[in-house]
Each structure stands twice: as structure tokens, then as C-alpha cells.
Length: 188
Image (cartoon, rainbow, N blue to C red):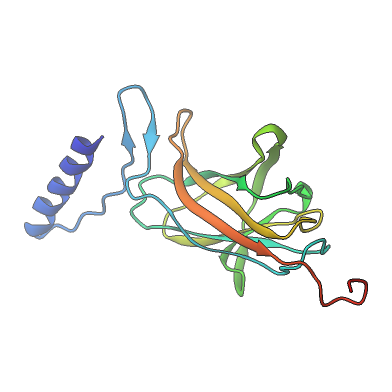
């Protein structure tokens, strides 16, 4: 894979030095058909609207930048809970995605299937149509409610390019800290 990427970069540099600008957007594809991003997306940030335990109506936002030279559109994002005292359940039908960030929403994106795998604590968000490179997008997940137990919850984010056999690129962890609402009247 590195040889193909290096060759593509060297070729584009040679052509651009010769005065012909070239946009390198072809994805890296291995002999076995596995498709990779040329430049992978980046997890920009992960935030929640509420940080207290047991709160209803929260939204978890995952903002991802798909660079112009990604080489392939973004087909799917998986969000897998890796740490936390309690499994988080989601209202999958309330999942949304849009171009922009949580505080600057632009156009809404159309989603395909949004599914959950309980045993791996993973949510799969499919885009239909896939997201074209050069955009910053945000996925909004709605939990049934925030966890009952306070602490740190780590949610791993992985992006997949278009392709029957695509390689998922791990983008990092969304880190959510939930707090006990000890200041409430029902706790001494």
C-alpha cells in the first residue's frame, strides 16, 4: 500500500512541477480488492448536550472531517463503546447527520441503515448516498438516556470508504464524562 501511495504522490508532484495541476483523488486499492482512503478522515470532536447521569433527551455529536484528497467517499461510520460502566442504548431511528458542526448545521445528509450490534456495543451509520470528500460532517446519536453510572465512557469512531471490501480507518475516541447529580434535592 505504501508503494502505491508513494508512487501516486511522486507522480502528482512530477506533473505539477511541469505546470499541469493534478488532483490526486484515486483511492488506494490492494490486489485483493481492499479499498483504503488516500488521506483518512479525522475525528474533529465529540460532544454531548448533557453531562449528568440518567438525563433524557441528550444528543451525542461526532464531528468528522473528510479531506478533499480522501480518494473515496465516506460510506459508513461505526461508533463502538470501548469503556464505561454501563452499555449505552440508542434511539436509532432518531439518528441524524448533516454537513457542518453541532453549532453550525448546514445541509442534512441522507442516511441508509442505522443498526446496532449489542454484543460489540457498536452502532453502524450508513450514508446513502455516500459523503463526498472535502466536507466536515456531524453525526447526532440520541441515547435512550445518559448512563446511570458516572464516569468516563469512551466511544471509538471508525470510518469506511465506499467499496465491497473497504478498510475501516480508526479515527479516535469520543470521550464523554458523565457526572452524578449530587446537587439535586433527592441526594443528601
